[in-house]
Length: 251
Ligand code: PGA
Image (tube, rainbow, N blue to C red):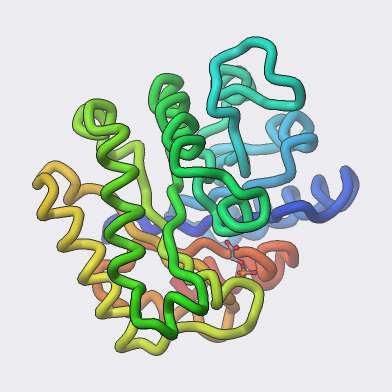
């Protein structure tokens, strides 16, 4: 069976002590269960250094954010080459909280993706519709636009390294709400994303697609039954090592 991806996005939560404890607990539980999947944790940036010292082959390290610019006068930003220095393996781009709360533009997202490709850091690129768009039946239009914009700005890099990109379908209305799309909605959307990618270029068939939004140990196994589903992006439930491990063990 090809490796699935289980990613834990800690967002802006925890402190140094709790982050170290969560990392250690997650790593030892993964070792005990002999987990064969690709498990990634995304701690807050300030804890990347202490956590990098703890990560082993059992777990990959991800950053929640990256600068759209190369090194230079960009106060407060962290560049892709700095992340590479820390041996960060993955970075999130396009998460709905950054699109809708921080107001990041497609242009900024595309700059981030380019910098990550240049530094050989794998990208988990989030796409998804708002509740209003969902109710207006605009989900597929929104997803098509988000995918096309991503591909248009990064065609060359994507063609060379399609495996460096993973998509995460995260309906904005499902994040932190306890709501999840029905199984038939998910299967329709995953087929749509897969065929949209294939239509652009056959080389994009290797791009993995994850689901994120209110994933729990109770719904993870069911969600994973969706066709074309390559893994899960977990928010709230990744902050409690038992819940995160339970999700990993159901896959
Ligand atoms: P949630 O968050 O699991 O807490 O809904 C998912 C995410 O934002 O990636």
